[in-house]
Structures are given as structure tokens and as C-alpha cells.
Length: 261
Image 1 (cartoon, rainbow, N blue to C red):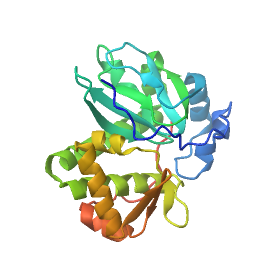
Image 2: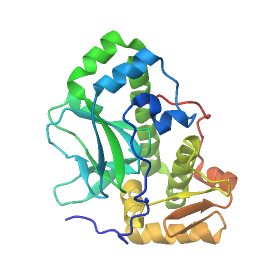
Image 3: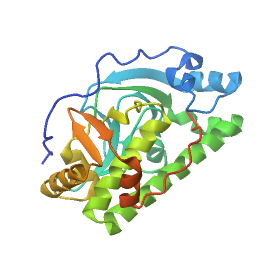
């Protein structure tokens, strides 16, 4: 049984930036949010990249249990990682934003242990997973970056487990809003008025937070009534980020440049 979204409107514009043919010309690298790499490292990544693809919302990039050797960097749009039970119930593990790297886990297991679906129209860079050892052997700094990304993913999953296991409904929704806001802010996707694109439906939020759809809806309304945020037409505005952070009991990581493969 597949979850039906509350609306099918695609919030991500179809005029996303064209994907560059050279990694040195990547718009993400030019944003200032990511580490600068040496020319030789950029050349290796460019050689490792096998394709670039643009996919519609709902496209499955990694299918649960399927064998696949492809690794990905999300260039534009949103996606999410998830696991499903046999009756179709879904747990969203985390949301993927531009610059996020994914697919590594399937290289170390017999088939993918999770799925990845494009939440909006998205653009991805595709890499040859079979050459992963070559990256570690010949490009130690890139290997360290990959290890750092895995550690960051582990940290976010720890936070998600704390949220679903111990936080109240108000705290869960608050932490999701502030966490995604901070991640978007780090990569330059938050406007001066504290607004940002927010294509999640309430069903996505419920599936990520372990709440019912009704409970998620009521909690969002309570937070909005407190003047902490507004959410309309696929756009989130944080009215009081400090109060929302305190309510969520959320410890934001210091802003630092991120690795980008």
C-alpha cells in the first residue's frame, strides 16, 4: 500500500540549473558551502562520474533489496531515504538535499537495505561504485571526505532515533523544521526573510517522525498558532528560529564547509 501525498504539486521548479559537464564548473562548488579541491582531485571525481541524470518527482533512484553499483551526489532538488514493511508502512530515514552523497551502503551488503526516492524533480551525478577502492587508494583526502560523510550520516541517524524514541510530538515537528532549515541555510538556500522551499507533504513528515497524519497536522497548527512558523504553498518561513530551536531542544552544529563528491 503506497502512501498518498496530501497534494501532488511539485514545488521544485522545472528550471533547475543545468548540470555542468566539468566538475570544476559545478554550481554547488561555487556556492562557498563546500571544501575546495585540488585540480587532480577534481579530475579524479570527473573521471569517476559515469553520468548525470535529471529525474521526475517520485522516481526511485535506489530500490530496496535491489543490487546496484551506482553511487550518487544530489545536485539539485530533494530526495529521501526510506525503508518499508511488507504491508507498505514506510519509515523515512532522512531527507537528502543538494550536495548529499548516497548509495554507499549498498556496496557493503547484498542488495540495498533502503530505498531512495526523488521527492521533487531532481538532478544527480552518478558515480562508478566499482572504483571505490581506487578512490581510497589514490585519493586519500577524498577517502577521508567520504568517511566524514558517513560519520555525519551516522550522527543524523542518531538524532533521528532520539527524536522518534524520546521527543514529544511538538518537539519532533520542531526539530524537523529547524534541522532542515539549518541544513538549507548552510548551502545558501534560505532567503533573507528566513523562508525556504519546503516540498514535504504532511505525510512525508508523519513518515519521518513516526506520527499519525492527524497528529502531525494538529501539531503543525499548534506551532503556527504560537507564531513560530508558517507553511504555505510549499514554502516554510521561520518566524522565531530561536524559540523553535529551544522548543526542539536542538543543538545545531557549527557552520562549516562540507565535503562534496
